[in-house]
Amino acid sequence: MAATSNMLPLGTVAPSFNLIDTVSGRTISLEGLKSDKATVIMFICNHCPYVKHINAELVRLTDEYIPKGISFVGISPNDIISYPEDSPENMELIAKELGYKFPYLYDETQEVAKAYNAACTPDIYVFDKDLKLVYRGQFDNARPGNGQPVTGKDLRNTLDSIMAGKPVDEMQIPSIGCSIKWKVDGH
Image (tube, rainbow, N blue to C red):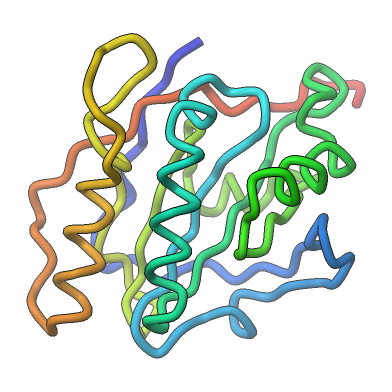
């Protein structure tokens, strides 16, 4: 089922987290990850067609901006009982297959997704050097089947503004994607 971003208020301070990176097995904290330029937190998963649709360009974009000092992290909060494709083992396989250069963390308790008020995959948040929210919304206008090219335009424009020391445009379009697969009582 499709969902849209909840659009956390701009200026919100990034909630802290400590999660396991499915590739390295290390615990990654927000404080250890944060950049003195910008930190991008992306709620993504393996099974969602909206994430699959942008993955190749997401890898290109992160490969371009990581060397410029921007930090990125992918977090999957989905219920793996109902969606085994999103298991940590499969997250590791996808991260290696696609060449993710950013940590891909598993939010087993779903507490991090709840703290960010995340609603869908992909759900993208950009925080400034002080970990204050400056962007939340879509990667770009592309959706599976809508014929729009996948460019990462919205995220690129945000990062370019930050790199240039300019304010980020506050006219932001919510992300649309698969709803986060919340756990039901019993597991």
